[in-house]
Image (cartoon, rainbow, N blue to C red):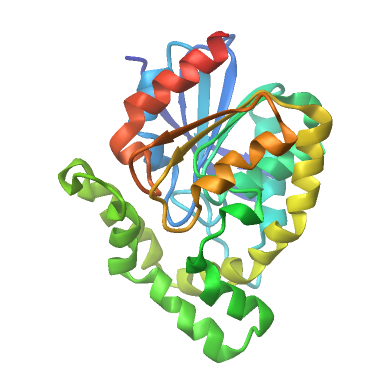
Length: 284
């Protein structure tokens, strides 16, 4: 098992925390986490892939141990998050790399791929959506907020930030709840409880509609550049449905699609299976 190093780097005005493992000179792999978690979600996957890749897993701006500036100093949008992570890759010397995208990591990573297609050597999407097909009815409260960003609709979404909701996201669709470590849930809830975090996340909920608006752009990138693509999907995800994984083949016919019998946070229960799929995929 490779040593994991915990680092911090200044990216313009941002201190970005990241985990690094593997040997420089190996193929580079950038791991991008989602809501409401951090690079901690990759704690089991990183050791399984560190012999094959040079791995870097940052905490997105405002998440985990990366800087969380106040809303009057930084506009929390997916464009801005992607811009910071794009600069992060340049600062640390990640010039050509594959990306593993999950949840919020998908619109972040796909923006970078659209901007720099020549840098992307492959994409692994684990419940990282880019098609309307993948959106469940669970998005209805969010859509109501997009259509009418009233105070009432904003307040209604605070339920998504509650500790019980975090736990539900981790265990929904999991065959055996005892396989899910409570530590990840507790850590996510700790970060969510920080002062000012609720409004930051509500701002991102509102801006999530920008990701849907970019779906045609992401899909055009897939059609034009045909990146090596592996979708590994927790098939019981209550937010991103299996048709969202299958839809990638419309634009990348040779994309590989695999489903695992778990929920949204598939790495909590299926890290070994996902690591095996990634190694096999890149060995071809």
